[in-house]
Length: 88
Image (cartoon, rainbow, N blue to C red; front, side, top):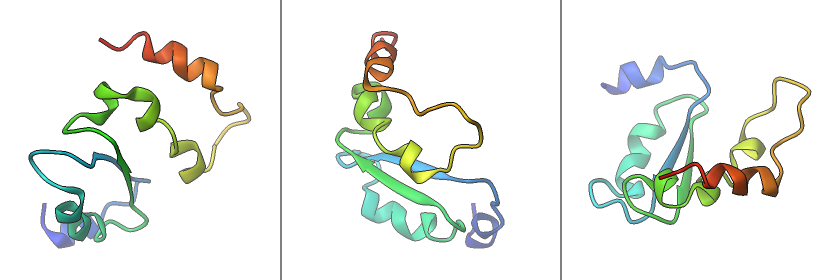
């Protein structure tokens, strides 16, 4: 996408990026991410698919980044641990 197209994104956007991604380092992604209004870069341990390698680390901060739009409480550590058992 061009910089102009990235600047037109209006949806809340968070990138969960592995700090050891062999294809594109977070530092290389930052300039494009910065063009998306309000976008957040969440760097986590891992490679290209950090949410598959360590789901708990990948889920660690999004609730703090995005405001909740409903009255449900954020997931508990126990819920997150149970979720990780569903990952291959």
